[in-house]
Image (cartoon, rainbow, N blue to C red; front, side):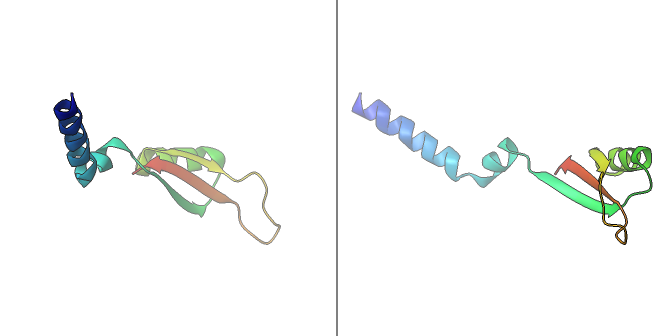
Length: 74
């Protein structure tokens, strides 16, 4: 029983130390921001360029242009 447990822990340690396995397991969320030219345009640009979901901010200060926020998996 002790040999099996030791072997199992050794296998887990080897898998955990392999960065490539860890990187493939978890995709990160990335974000891009640019000036918004309308909700539909923001949605389309984000989908076409990054295969993500884009949305213009709902509220902005009067002197600041609205921004398109694009979230995608990278």
